[in-house]
Length: 332
Picture 1 (cartoon, helix red, strand yellow):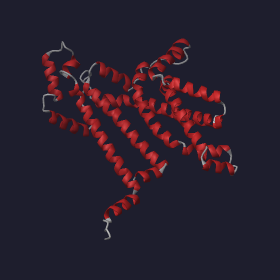
Picture 2: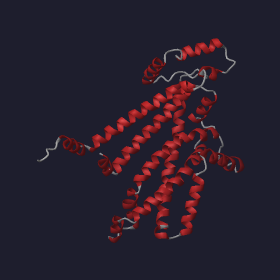
Picture 3: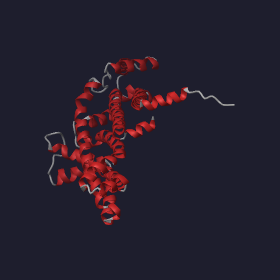
Picture 4: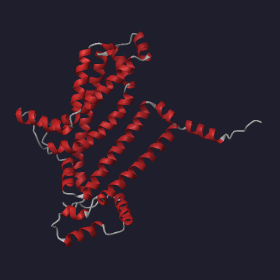
């Protein structure tokens, strides 16, 4: 007896294969919305995860009980939890992140005043990371290809691992000590002119640039041994065309993924680096908010940093799909 199969599942699969980009956008947007909701919920729970009274913890043990009660009423902490959550979401949609407990200023105003300076540092550092890592990674792959220059390869790998393992704020302190205090070449604090960008950007970029250069070198070495590169050599193309047109684009798939993670790390890494250099960004504000237990401000900063990281992750996924559409089709 011949079994009759239901053709509907096959039609559904074929339909998905016909629309890989629509399916890609649907999955990514669903993932983005769910992640954003989880982030918003976590930032709401920050106040409620604190043991005891968060307002008392913020204002101090000697604060007037009447003032504490008034602040609790103002923040809505006396309402039922589900009502607090609903009000938090409602205010969030209107761009209202509340008022800082210590500063009494709107949280959104405090963040927007300083976010631009933080993004300047993070984007400049990311550009430096990309330029240095691509040049260094591809260059080291070319000169060490086929097991040549073992000592140079060992020196590069050891140096990259050693420097990349140093935290950004320790690099910042070292740069201040050498370039700012001992040699007095660069300003050690504040934002005054182009020279004040150099040390913060260096502190943020040196470690990630070396780490990414190691990855690009390995990816480039694997691509240089591929058949299509040997075919390009057999056609007697210029080495520059082989490396830039054939090898580098194919080595960027894994690099884009790591690059997106590095950009996210650069944004969050600015917190301590900005504090070391007294940079007028979100970093010193974040540290002060944590020390003073200013929970509305901490909530807003968590939302901003988390939202930026989610947005960067989404953009990296889109770039990866554009660079290698076959992965999108396979995933569909």
